[in-house]
Length: 517
Image 1 (cartoon, rainbow, N blue to C red):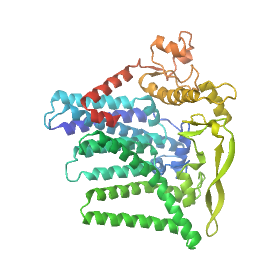
Image 2: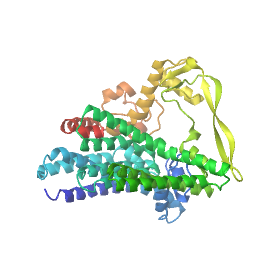
Image 3: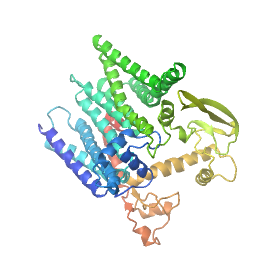
Image 4: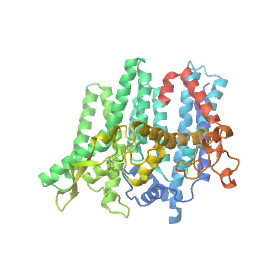
């Protein structure tokens, strides 16, 4: 059918309109719970929020606040931004689904039938509208938080990669890769979650360009992890770390003005990129040329972080961590105020500190140079109370109480590895992941904040016998709980339909299945 593109656009925008109306009409009228108040205030006056910051979110939010008729309407304007960003997320989700569906419904170019077209559009509409009304997504779509905008960038880059795939054999296909790199750079100024799309993008590229082999899959996986690591540690914090070393040398050793070393390093990087682009162009190296262009556009997007420094120098009322020079900016980007947490190996919560090792110095801006202020202290814990995969490590009293409750630790005993795993599966995975997942596709008990008790915030299917095994009988529930507005019964149907679709996708197109998975 020659009008596939037109119909795909019309239905996509119709789905966008439905999502936009739903989100705009249900938007929060003011600031919501958790970080929303901080983000709204940061956007309104371009202030510096908590590390590692969200400068691009702040800039977009500031634009939306310009339409507020008075200060009482500022919050809802930022919330409208989230609503529109979420509606666009649904639009790109629709186009992503139709692109994937078309690949295994249309076997040959020009062979699309009317029934095939209906199937593709139906798949896109059902999937996108299911996303529209998902509990978690709808919640983030109507409040002034970064997750709505972050979801938009995630949907955008995945759609853009599929657009590249559809024109990969054409002359100017690499412009899509460069566009994705730029969007990645901008998304860093919203939330780092967008970087998790890199492995999926890498496999879309591999499946399109190379024959599938076990060796190829392994190397693609390694390349995806390396690219993710380079962006996360090499670009976001790594470049600022190197720039701060130049800054210390230029200011403290050479006696030059503040920021001279930082800007010298920036010029050095720009010059290296320019030279690399000319060299790769003159010598016919398109892969190197594209990689350098991607790096350059990633940095252009990432440059929104300059807003954080500029506004911190202005000393606004909210200026968290005061990142107004390279060293405080590095600390800000590394989120050092939150401390370190052991991921693979570390201490139990009841481990004693047996000694303290000295770490790197921290610097502050003096009158005409940078001065050493404090030296980082690295605690060393007793060896016998360290473990693999430490899940219960915090010594804060309220945390210890929760650990014991969830893992069943008695008294002052050191938790066993089994109890450590019990906490991971019951709380970290069960309560903090699967519970939210089931809210969306199985059902929800109520909208009351829960802490593990059977009466608040659990998932609920609506199948009485199954629910009673976990939460007890519902016959004597008070009306306030039985008719709670957040109570939903889906009877596992969305989950089962999703699993059927997952299996069908695997059978029809295993490559795309693994990309989505």
